[in-house]
Length: 325
Image (tube, rainbow, N blue to C red; front, side, top):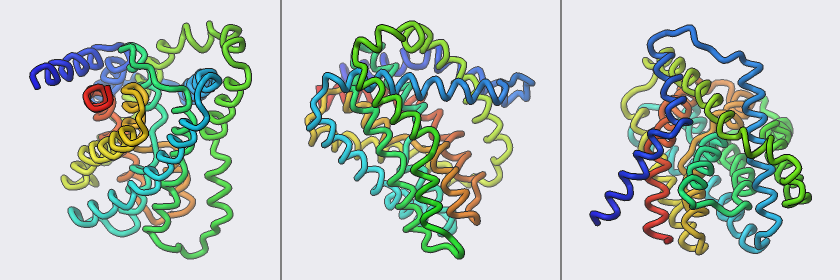
């Protein structure tokens, strides 16, 4: 027990003092003290495009040598987790807070989907700890983006004037999903030969770009917390802290049943524990116009995202190493 506690402490400490996490903290502090530090929107968008493309491509290269049967089982598990978690989130929100049905459904959808930046940070942490995950986890991440959106809509009920066709199209052609899946298949098709050609771009500068992007995420999270603090009641804030842990336990159980290695299992836990702040907000804006995005977006980006980044990822890797190692 003492060895497990010490290992968890070492993991947490190494994650806390890593450059990406420290740059996120810098951005958060800069926002809270009302600094004029800012990343231009065009630059921030370019950084996100690069990160999604890089992680997709590198995952595809890894997939070229992976087992298709293992990938299919992991993708299936990811889809089921993404579809089921919103029902857990919705039930807990309705039982513990005064959150209305529409807002609770919108929040729940965020907690079934995934944060690709949290996934990238966990992948980077796993490589640093020599616990790299299987390449097919990029495909799992892509598959877990959309099912939660449909769960959220089921929980909210049919909305007046809503077109299911428009919603399905909006989800299917979402830019982050298209780029992630497309880069994954390009990496899969070109393999290690293709990776060698673009290694300076996708490998050498990856962590530096991640630091810059997380600096911007810290700025965004800090501004959201300052603007919408009054709308986040204590039961809702607590939801943003315990829901990731529930998702992580579900992900760990799935990883154990699938027989995944610790690195891959930790990444499945991270996906299950994360909350979307890109794909789901865009879909909810179209499908549930009466939902208050200030609550769900601030909860996922301002509370759950930093919790996972600072405390969650080390905890998930420690748990995966203990249970799956």
